[in-house]
Length: 284
Image (tube, rainbow, N blue to C red; front, side, top):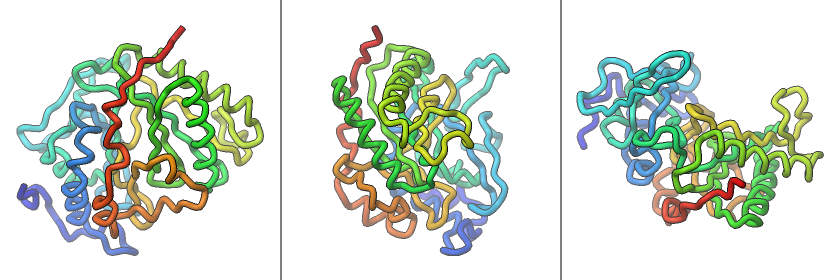
């Protein structure tokens, strides 16, 4: 694909310290798209637009903007606050056009456009109050153990920053409310069993350095950064799928970045079986 015609001001610097440009971001997404595609295909996207790169002002936008390529798919969703016409992922052309608008990360719904009220994954967002990835890794291993005990396969990835995301592929059927309630029960159990290190406390100042177990990403309309999404962080790190044996306290998430992504793409896909392991939740 000759995507350069979609990029205006390709030499615009997005990461001043590293010298990465808007064109570098577009090239990254072209390279990772064969793996990214399955996580954005027919999914509603929320845009985080940073026209001046990682140090500039950013804003979120749900409504599909004018000026996108004519083939860009969209989906009208009714919210209590009003109708929103979302951009739908799945085309490389769409992804590159979003980069041109300054979209560095990719924020996706937990459901597909064809069945927007039926999630096909459950996600746990582990946010360390200490700011240390080591705490996220340890919390992630506890989350895996809890999921293993109820027979659910799970897949970890770096958030692209200091956190860890734990995904559980699902067979569509339960509503977002059902999935969120299921995830919340697991978070409550873990926090009760490990009160010194884990918490479900919403107030930041009450977490006291513990890892926050967030189940709210499983709400209708909520988003999470997709696997292989770049983040607006130093070194231009990206959210990287891992194998559980790779989730170690000493891991530095920033080692997966715009400067060395080709090396990581040359390795086997840690999540190649993700959508082959769709599972049902026992809601009763």
